[in-house]
Length: 530
Image (tube, helix red, strand yellow):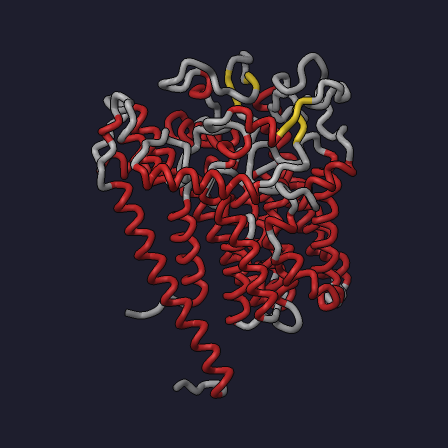
């Protein structure tokens, strides 16, 4: 059997890894559920409206978060960008095909059908995360890193940073990270090859990142301005690059404006309805304390980007001197991180709501790790520490639902730990405030171990709780008291696991061959193998 090329092996390895880790349970918060509803509605109605959210099947209450719009003001729309549903559509089509082959009929088993189809649709995030790792590998190579070094750093990114939990849940951040790091890779290659085609493709990816999520425009601005600082290019080439990327940012902003006009008749109305958390006052989204927001994003145990991606401090930051020699890359990263901290530090939910880690900064984590590809290769000690610390926290986050840890679960008072209620807060700001002492390093292992002990004792768990893996949720649905629970075939969950493990093994074998091949070349000399 032939080994896959290194880039393909990276893609397959993390596709299988994230597929194995995938939660597939989108029924927690609107940020996941309504994106699925958008995808489902796009397939069935050709529309991004979410009428399912007003009265979801099998629920006696509405889960709608958004606003009513349309010509008559009666169409429900979720407050999210228009692109994620299109990106997930191929996975949704495949999921419907699997449900049909497995005999899970929507008419006779509606609950089981939606659990199965939504869970398979959510694998779009796994693919996005794998593409983000592959984009980082390509960008690292474009910066001059050896194949071995680029592979090792890609494994650190994919397994030991906050990209891991976001590649297993149906949020848009993995898509955003993939678009941005691929744009960076193409820009680096365009600079080396003086290629207008690569520049145009990079601008297209920045545009797509912008319409994936409106707040991505904060980081997209850094892409547009960074080429102006590039000493390796003449003034005309710098101007052309900045112009192309600037147009991408402007066009993305115009798409959002037109989308908002189409839905609500107002270009500045993104559809967020904060009346539940801010009663009796007009919301002031960026009226919060910047100092407190920076504490949340940089040093708090639950949301610090350094704790959720320790490789940034251990591997990337020591390369600051080398980064200073590449003014375009250095200024772009500094500006992107600075704008992110400034904007989201002022946002009244700097923690990103219910989620794992610093959600707002996830799209630029692969970019911030790129300096690790410069200069001298990291020491084995630094690599081991970055892997150990990052894998410890992020693997527990990938094993446990963020919502069970932060808000729900058996102990309903847990929300008092993640948030506190302060009725003295200024008007226009939410009464529920993120607690700076929230420590998932303590709570996540407890929840995971509690679930493992229940499994060992043979105790049942409700779907969506306990260890957060899709095959387990399928098994819990089958053992539940739902009328159509038995519609999901018993073999389906184990088949998914075996398929992912097989792909993972092949990809690991291919990666091992690539690492050994380069080590042998370094020892024996170019073109020589043992």
